[in-house]
Image 1 (cartoon, rainbow, N blue to C red):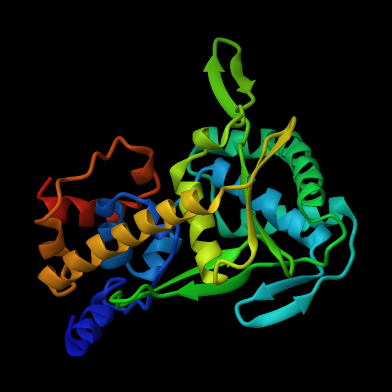
Image 2: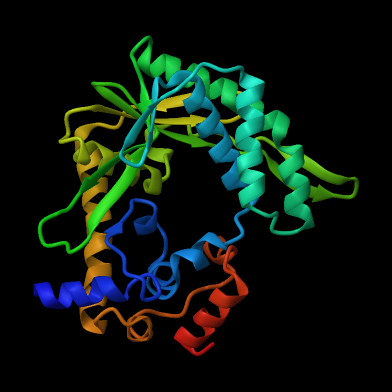
Length: 300
């Protein structure tokens, strides 16, 4: 792609605000959702998305555990040393941050956000055990940005590492408690963890593969799962990582091809892909404004 066209495309992304990078998570969503969220929507519109309790559960698990076990947490380029504090104090602070920034999606989500707390605390305890099992007494840092640009890609791929030492890193995935409606209200169901690496979600494996490549393939990678009862650790081999990294790159280049033929115009991009299935959970966080954009893009 010519430099001038690439510059024009970058300036049109994010609702005309401009956008400079992919992320492993943005490359793991359907292309239709990518067009809606990262081409047609501004950053402010993305931040207005109402995310359900499961995402907040995962954020609480990760954020609290990081403040307990990591010596340093990065805030963009700033490396901040973490002060030791009590579990309950950290948990309440992180919970309040989430609640202030994110309104519940609906009454059910508000209920789940409250009732998830005991399970979430138990999952954090499992996370601490998991981190100890992976790193032992190594000095840890969290949230460091890493980036990588495959040859020919016009946008960097940028991501943040959950936990890392000098020679290892860990991508953490929590499995929140599920709430199932019954005649008495809601029943809780503990999500099972995969018992074999072949059963790990490919989206997670792609994230691990990206961080591995972004660290020049030198740090030993781990994928860890927790629920309220246990943890599981997986150590993907190099061939598996190379495969998933290539799949991530293939998605990035597919989106780039759409950028090129449409010159960054979301209306033109939408003409090359089928309309989204709005019943899919990927679209459950769309705001009314984004739903209107979606209807316009695909003439729904």
